[in-house]
Length: 88
Image 1: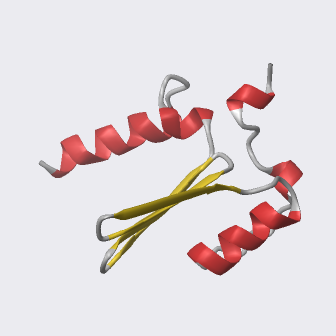
Image 2 (image 1 turned 90 degrees about the horizontal axis):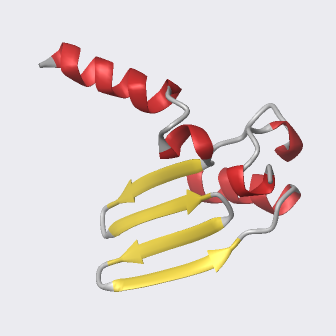
């Protein structure tokens, strides 16, 4: 039911207990797989092949968002929600 989906989406985007509020996550489906950036780990899946690489904070992180995901944010990397393991 649409109401259940709406409630689930609200919970996952607001609860401090979910992965989506405790880390940086972006994912993009592709015809042959998907690409995801979880904190500073970029994973690309193409068919049966998976590659993962680290993305440095700062400008490299923002460039990855723009080039891979088409996301150009009106913010600096330092302004984004901190990654939990960086908070101590």
